Image (cartoon, rainbow, N blue to C red):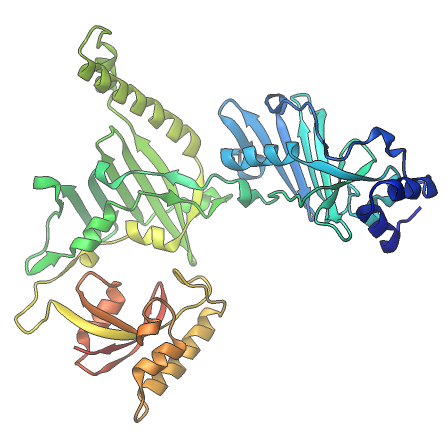
Length: 463
């Protein structure tokens, strides 16, 4: 028997005697409602600790999570760890599904309700034990007619219920990837080294904990903000995706080494293909001699010595676990993140200013972003953004043009409402491309199109 929209609306929206009568009329598709209690849980008595594998199928795609001693891993990403938070959220959602109404026991109605196992629109979650047997599971279907919930059923039963609220699960592999690769506090970094084919630079903490760039060429000085950013590069290194082709990292162009005060030295090897950036990671923990020496510290030693011992042994264990996880894995990371680690020496220094070279200037700009540019919500393509920037540039140079008005109309970002006014800023405050272009301008002069990771700029120097 097929349920019509009208019949389905009645079943989802009417309670009490009318529901019972409806069940009687359509006895071919429904069982008795007397054994059903509104508000009861769909899945009862589940022990999450007995779940060894989770499968999620939706829209023709499958995702498998497998339990290990450390937690769940993602089969489709070479066993990479799944986010503990996301897995826990999945369990909670499964165990929190409450049934508002009993709709049908007839399997023939599954397709109309969107809970057929082969329905691409349905979400099928199965919780399996270590023998591959389904312990529990749920099929989430279409929206309840004239209701706020969805149709649901257990994977091993035909009876369909109307859930008391909306139920949805994260179904994509990317939803479960634990994206954090490295997290190193800036205060714990004591030295950074960037090695490239034609350049090597080192920055280290000097007196008063100040970060100092070493081997600065004659006539140059360090760009303090850029040098400082080296020590922030691993403060939160996250992945965009896990690459399936290890060859993407076969020929690194940059080696970024970060030495910390926590007995750990991180090594990031960076490669680039087309517009994508890839990294391989490793870490060197405390030396074997230091570990051996620490292990000899007896339990009756002063607490300070015991704390040192614990720090060394913990760092040693963490280094082993880190290398075990990241060995032979290649990760895609964001371009801005890679940019922090790719800075050569020439980008970290600037000419010592002459008397006629101001330390600070004042400028306004019009920014045109595009989809994928940093901090932009624009949906236009890069080509469309450049074309718009060219049009705007032409307007700014027309006779009688009002730069501030054009900025309010076309610019994006915080300065838009100020007519593009960025106020006074010194060297190192802006992206290097922006800075070079702005310092070349005379007061009142307008630049050509300047590209930065934020998009395309038209700059006017005002002071």
